[in-house]
Length: 267
Length: 150
Image (cartoon, rainbow over all chains, first blue to last red; front, top):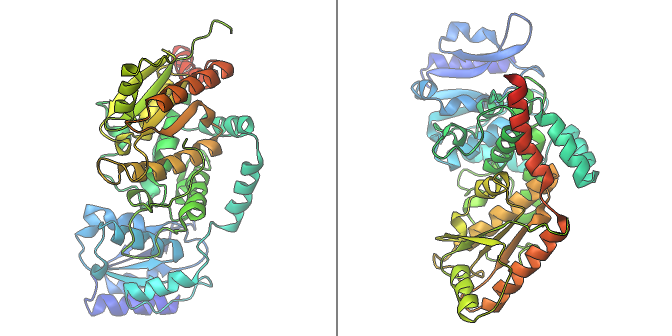
C-alpha cells in the first residue's frame, strides 16, 4: 500500500497525471472511490479486500475525461474493463497510467497497455469461483424451475438501473430503456418490464461482460443479475473461444463472426 | 384446446425467405394460414427485442428466417444474426423461457417448398404446445398489479 501511495505522489508531483483514481476509507469503514488531485492528499489512498468497486466505470464520464492524463488503481477486472473500453474506442490508452494491483494486493509494474495485456493473459479469465458454483446449480434446474427462480428474483426489481450505472461497459448516453418511440421496455417495475429489462441488459453485454460482478453488488435489492451476464460470458467462451477484455484491438463478439460458427438449432 | 389456433409471427429477410414465401404462393403450395409475415431488409436487422415484442403482443410462436450462410445480400448479415441467436437462445434457456416456440431457419428464394414445411411444422408444434400462457401471464400480471397499486 505504501508503494501505491508513493507512486501516486510521484505521478502527481511530476505532473505526469492530473488525477489518481483510487479508493479511500469512507466514514463507515467501507472503501469508496477517491479522486486525488493533490499529492499531499495521496496518503488517503488505501488498497485492501474492501476495495471492490470497478473504477473503470468513471473513465467514460465527461467530467473525469476532462482531467486529461490520469492514473487508475486497477485489479484484474478493472484492467479488463479498460481493455474493452479502449477496444471500443471509449478511452484513449495513452491517457492512462495503470496502477495495477495483483491478486495478493501488491503493486504491479505496468508500464504500458501491452504489459497489461501480458499480465491479463497470464490470469484465470473465467468467472469467480463462488459464482461458478451458483451457475452450475442453476444450470442443473429444469426450465420451469429456472423460470420461477428468475421471476422470483425479478419481482424484487425496482428498476433503479443501478446495475447499468455500476457497469463500465454500459456507457451509452441514451440507453434503450430511455427510448420511448418505440417504447422497447415497459417503464413500470412490473413482471413484464423487469423481465425484459434484464434480458435486454444481458444481451447488450453478451461478449462484453468481463465478469467483475459489479452489477450484482450494486443491486440494492440483491438480485444476482451478474449471473446472467456471467452465464453469457461462459457461453461466449464455449462457442467462440473469446474472453472479453483481453486485448485493446479485439472486436466485440457480436459485431464480428466466423463463417464456421457452430450451432444446432437453425433448420 | 382442440379449437386453439396458434398465432405465429414470421420475421423474414427481404432477399431470400420473403422471395421464397412468394414462390410458395406462386407454386400454389398450400400452407397453414396462421403465420403473419413481417419483412425485414436482412436477418441482421432482426433485433431480439422484436421477438419479445411479438410474444408480449400475443404471439404463440415465432419463425425467424433468412438467407443461407454465404448467400446474404449484404455478405455478412446472417452470420452476425447467427451469433446473436446463439447468445439469445443460451440466455433464454438460462432464464427458463421456452425457445421451442421459436423456429430459426434458412430458406432461400428457391425453397418455396421448404418454407411451407417450416411453417406447417412450426404451427403443428405450437398447436400441440398450446397458447403461450406463461408469457401472457407475465404481461397480464402487469395490468393486475397496476390495478392493485391504484
